[in-house]
Each structure stands twice: as C-alpha cells, then as structure tokens.
Length: 285
Image (cartoon, rainbow, N blue to C red):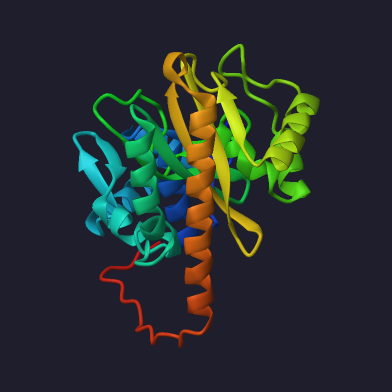
C-alpha cells in the first residue's frame, strides 16, 4: 500500500529518515488534512511516511506543545494550531475575513434558508475560510479550513475562471472527479463553462457537488485580481436563481470595494515593529 507525504503518494518502503525534524513534524500535521479528525499513531505514521518509533516520539512532543491533543488512543489537532492559524493575514482585524463577515451576514439574512460561504485559492486548492448557516439551512459537507472541490462547486469554478491558465491546467490535469450525475466530467466542458463565467461574472452549481443543492458564486477582486469568491447555497427546490444571482453579485461588488479601500490604506501605513517569536519548547531529533 502506498505511503503518503503531504498528501502525495509515496512508495511503501519510503521513509523520511534523513529529513529535517521540521519537515517530519509538518508531515505529521498534514496527515490530519485528509480526515477523519482523530487518527491513531499507526495511521499517522503511514500517511506521513515515517517509522513508528519516530512518529510516536514526535507525537508526544506535538502533544506537549499543544499542537496536537490526545483523545484516548488517538490524536487530533490541538487548540495551539487554531491559535496560530488565526494569525494568518486574512484573519487579522481589517483583513479579508474580518472585512467580509458583515457582508456575508447581511447576504445570509436576505437569502433566507441558505448557506453562505467565502473561499480563497491556496496554490492549486480552493479553501473554505468562512461559512454562515442557520438552524434551518441545508446541511453541507463544507468546513472552514477544508478544501472545496474546484471543478464541482460554484465557489471553485468562479475562482478558476479568473485564475492564471497554469492553475487551471494543473487542476484539470488531476482529473475531474464526479460526485453526482450533474458533475462536469469532461475538460472541454469545464473550459467552456469557465469562458461563460468570465463573460457573465457568476458561476452556478446545479446539484454538481451534492444532489438536492444548488448555488451561485461571484468573484471578489482587489486591483482587478481575484482574491476570493462568495457563494449562496440553497435546496434546489427553493433556489431562486435570479434573486440569488443579484444578491451574490451585489455583495461581492461591495466586498471588493471594501477590500480595495483597505488595501489602499495599508499601502501608506508604516511597518509595525514585530518582536521575536519565542518557542516554549523545541523539537528534538
């Protein structure tokens, strides 16, 4: 059975015995990005491509530093990672997430029983970075911090439509996964859809990711460069495409203007003095 390193398959006899300790720690943490939330030590070692003894030692250190938590015989991501993750630029006060929340909240209220989502591109992946839903909203598998299918969702396709050609080529080259009979399954069909999205400025998802759910997404720009997409998802039976389209496009335009103003203000702000980062405990080989 192939091993994995950072989500990439490795030969069964591949071990990172000579890799730097930080690379090994990252490989262990990345093992959790494939789900489920809690993993046993043996499964973590298999996914990280590390010997069991090395994995056990580093798991203990990651638990001690708070980056992982012990749950019976299994491990899960700790609050320390959540704390560190919230220092990402888009989580800062005045950053993308902070700026977007009021607009997303307003869109949710006006949209009714819906799910509102904000996504960004990270290399060749589309990541959900915010999600708003209510008690009567449809259930979706999307979780904050998780990747979103790039070619099956309105969020992903609208980002692809305005991304560099190399990004599109790389993602299409990975193959088009089908989740439902409505999912796009041929590269030529996807490229045609992306052309339409560039012309119309919106992307629709008609049960392509989940049967019974439909949605629409629009791009968010700074300096004419796409930085995110926002989407509204509802049950197909109650989805009013024209109203949803107008609501999402209007919200995306308002958010783009707000982010543009913030970007222009930051151009003239003096650099802050950043103190040294102190580690309470280090990793040992």
